[in-house]
Image 1 (cartoon, protein in one colour):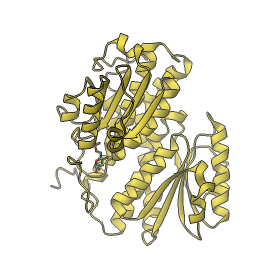
Image 2 (cartoon, rainbow, N blue to C red; image 1 turned 30 degrees about the vertical axis):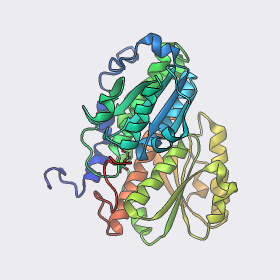
Image 3 (cartoon, rainbow, N blue to C red; image 1 turned 90 degrees about the vertical axis):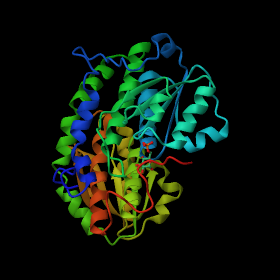
Length: 372
Ligand code: G6P
């Protein structure tokens, strides 16, 4: 009903707008005043956590993209080897699992059959399973050794938005917590990341306040057939998520690529006026990646692409090559997906509306896929 949508035309718009609160709620009570993490829910004892020698993340759809981003954070902050795999692929390839493997299952609904089957398989091999889930008491957390709930509140729109942002927050918390428990890399960088994580809800809010040009741009592209998305490092899964949203909602051909792969195929797709969204890493931090992606933008633009550039506030190097520039606040490199994904959600939602599509209930899709 209209009341449930709190004045928004669609649940998706409401859920996009709720993201700052969802992010803040997911952090609430989990970071103490001294910047230490208190994740009492992770009922896997500290000894077992110190023994872990491998982490495997399993998930589907948007949750899988959160898992891809988590891999960068976990390996960087904990130095534990981490792989992220589609739950539907995992079980059928006889994965190597043992009691020192921590399996992290990410699911908004907690009912996705492929993810559930993957975690059952992992537990049969003696691995510990930590669920990251948004739905209290659902099957996946019930069958896991421990659960870290995301506090996004109920997500109704089929295309996931606020659940995704809170999954990212939960993944960062797990990564930082493992670092804290194991005593690895718990230095200045990590303390400053914890501080910045506490501020991130405000930055998401800031992004939401500047979305009108993105909506205008989306409307102007409603008759296009294809949109490509490029990213690198944590911007790569963000590109995949931007493309997934556009497929789900606008029913357009949309593909995300790792920018470094451009010359190995995708650049052949570039033709005159093809919209290409590029997620630019911060020029601070891993600045090598920043410079490489700026060259990629030049390369595709020279071949006629219409470049839609998502770049940090104050990054002036991209200005000459951006046909459209979308600004996001400066964050630590690993946290950028929390702000960079938001314009892509708004973009897909507006494009779908402009094409006359049903935003909350896209054709052929279900909120939760409970069959294999
Ligand atoms: C379906 C939904 C997606 C979701 C995926 C995984 O495909 O349409 O939005 O990302 O399932 O769902 P889960 O509940 O496991 O996160």
